[in-house]
Image (cartoon, rainbow, N blue to C red):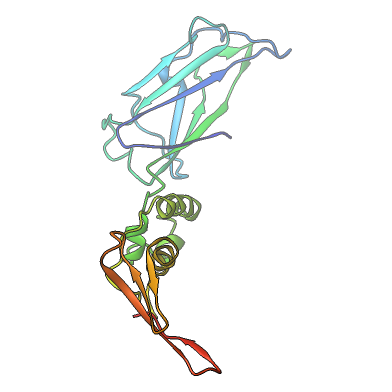
Length: 222
């Protein structure tokens, strides 16, 4: 069974499918398919959608023999509440009278969901909105979360620090400090090293130096 993906609320889902003779050749059904020849189930329930309102069957599609399309308008609320975010659906071809090559047909056309995957960003993660417990419920797809997080991280811009990050600083702040240390202007005497901000004028941090002729010491940047 083909999974067509997750769709936005009120969007349209289109499924193309084919019919074949017993020899495998493309063939048209005895009479053209209708929307009523399709059944739509929700979340594994055996209860079918009670209405075909908002469904459009094109048989044949593009005047090609054996090619058909069913389209579901998810904004149609004739069967109130049937289309809902977070739900999954399976479409079944089950004609009442139409036959293909003289045979009764039934076929799984495909499955889809409505906004099943929640998109999150690194800001939400940092705020504690997205936790392991939330992911475990299935409300957030862990793979999609990981991919989205990577994109957000690499796109995160660095900035001029106000001070040297503390011992419990965030990873981003620590990387920012290493970047400033490697990139920015620095001056050094026998007693003091100064690291400047991006403007090369404002001091960002300094480190005291000392040498007792045995050990050269570089003090903590502060």
